[in-house]
Image: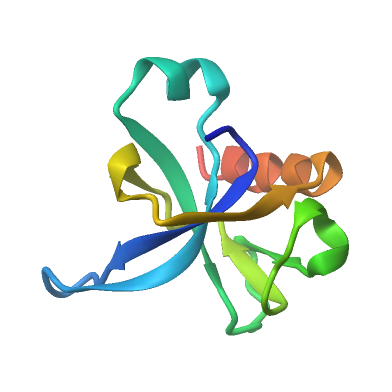
Length: 109
């Protein structure tokens, strides 16, 4: 797995130990990904409410693969997850759209 890939993961609820299967974007760089047991991820949501820290994506924004629904990448909800928890790969985000994601993440720091 590499940076910019959209995958399906068990995403934890914030108020419990339970989780739900959701898509997420791998945001950690490939050097980190090769040396770590975890990925740093940004969750996707199909709730299209505009917010300053989310980025709209659709099928047109994928370099490859298939996005089931138009979604928003929630750049302010980063989390790490063990590589072994990845269920499947959906696709790869385009370079242009990933640059937008990085820009939003940078504004958080």
